Image 1 (tube, helix red, strand yellow):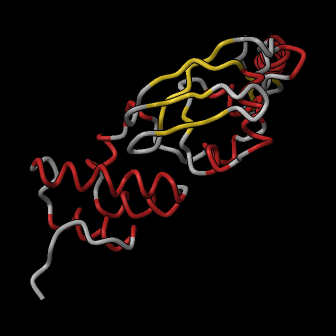
Image 2: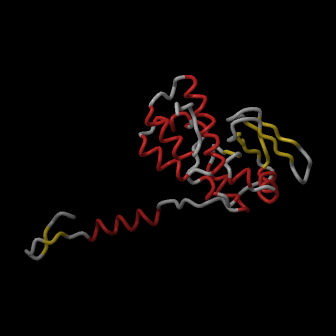
Image 3: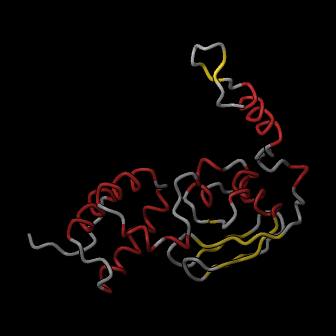
Length: 185
């Protein structure tokens, strides 16, 4: 019936179709960010090291030390402890030194803006496979901490021969403001 013409003018009768769309929109579950009452502050979440090297965080409230030995290493922390870290030392979040596999954590903490363009740990090496123009745009949006991690990892991958494109290396050096390989001058 939705495709029948009415009144001989060639117009389609779309009322049932529009009603179905409206009904579907009303029944679609809404995506909502986590709100404080929905999250148990004692819930344990995995925090990954987004810093290339050893990362140490000491709780200002409990004195407990959390140590990540390498980039990508994991530590389990309570959500309440992450809130404490946010209050005491926001640089762990601003620099993407604390990384999360689940986006809701940053949203819950009110720190999504710092993770909007962050490279997930699991995709870090794939980042270097982007074409130079795409790489340049992506690098421009990264936090200072992630840029440092990208530079560190790029040096490693260049020395291993995994990055050998002169165009990629030149783009990385230009955007990061660092020298990744020795240049004859």
